[in-house]
Length: 335
Image (tube, rainbow, N blue to C red; front, side, top):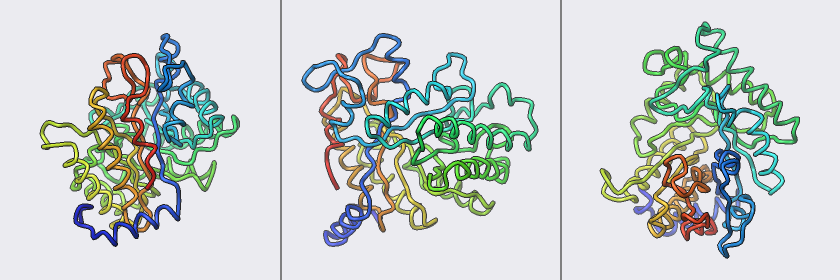
């Protein structure tokens, strides 16, 4: 059922349930932060005063930070040492933490799920062991630094599994399920209350999500939260709200079909169209709050701090001077 077809009474009841049960997650993935700072980037609040990024995000209603982990990146950025440094700053500023394991030395996404170079010749049993111990040791390192994540992703945008070709879901769903369980067990061994996320891209594609999570379920995979990416565009989908409605329908189905919580762990929109970005973020937060039984956890924006064409990315929430655009104010809304 689409949100726009819900009766006013049912919508108000679901919003009330969510408000009473838990605070809406309003998050930001800021994994580029230390690299940007090293490159000389500075950040400014809405008044134009230079400030650390975390209080800027806090002032705009954000309450959670997402950080990616790469196994052995050639640049060093996003290795566990870099992640700990960012996580300590985020915790000191009062943010909850989501840790996102890519299980790669570089970007993992629907088109790329490359094994870490050191794991390239491993048997599948060795891959399962390394997923466990990489996850476990990383989380213990964070715990020793005073950081216990509220959520952990085991894999990033795993539309067709991870650690290809051994964990390619379309070839061997059972292998992918076992890799997910290796990560899940490691997370719970460090902290049983941390929620484990399985994350796919293309939130608007319900058939993809049903295929994946039906397959994982039938192969005994364990997870707590369905995570999704959505990058609304004006091309190919009519308008941003079309994708947003499709994403809501999909996540409501996921919550009902598997009795799991759901969360948008990545969203990004053009920085120079703040009006449409604001409206879409606001609508997305409202839809998350309307997921039945309080199972919609919230929304993470992907790299809002990026600006001035950093790494060729133009979907941040800062203008070219490093100040928040009005789109970031959407996270101040309460549902």
